[in-house]
Image 1: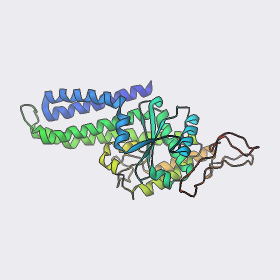
Image 2 (image 1 turned 45 degrees about the vertical axis):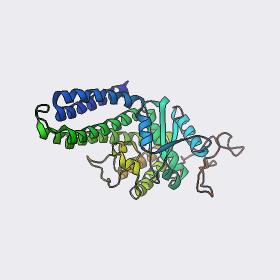
Image 3 (image 1 turned 30 degrees about the horizontal axis):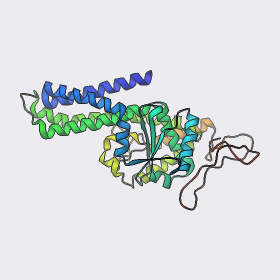
Image 4 (image 1 turned 60 degrees about the vertical axis):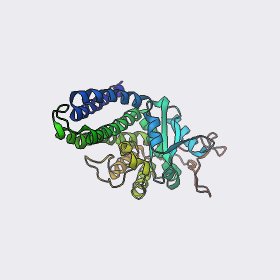
Length: 328
């Protein structure tokens, strides 16, 4: 109920902002045209925004046949998180990153980049996936996906006003000034909404994801690697669609490092510090183990000779050499 209320308030605020841009461009008539566009955007955002986002980010769906190890990892973590198995996608970019989308846990998808699978260790990949599953479980994905759709639409409407609004004083009481305000202020306002949505929820998803995987320091290590590699690798799909940047676990756009008002994500150093404190509270060491009787440690997958990775098979017990899964 709280999430539904929060999403409704956000949609109302974005719709009001959309109508304000329409008024600045075309007066009262422009405001009502914008309201009609906002209504359509709301509907598209709820039912189809996830498909649009996945297509824009060059993600293709995979299954147990094409990505058996990754699929088993997601299935095991989904069961641990208590949510249905989401659809699984791989993003065609060498930049290590990931995001989740979908209107609810029953219609969700997780997308990881080819670079994430290439550069991160299996424990780190599992920790990143657990972070995205935390977004799905808390139903952040609807809010973040709809926000991305609206932010892109607001920017497009503002640019439309620059080229076609013309500042006709008969239709727009503010004249050219109104168009300029719409062009420069409205996208910034939409960006601030994105930041407010993303920054707080990334901290929450880090915490919840670490609890799902049981391995906070694996997520801390993954974030450290991603932050180093992502800044050196251009994600062309994200650069073409910057309104969707807040959906990723780490900002896919180059050049944003500061934890300030204009950062789409919290500083990675702050996120790592939170995860280290959480690991201390959970009494988990850097290998993902908790203190207790000496037992055979979970055998996290090692990379194979082809450069891929795999998780251990589920089932079995300590006596027969098997384990229930890589997370205990």
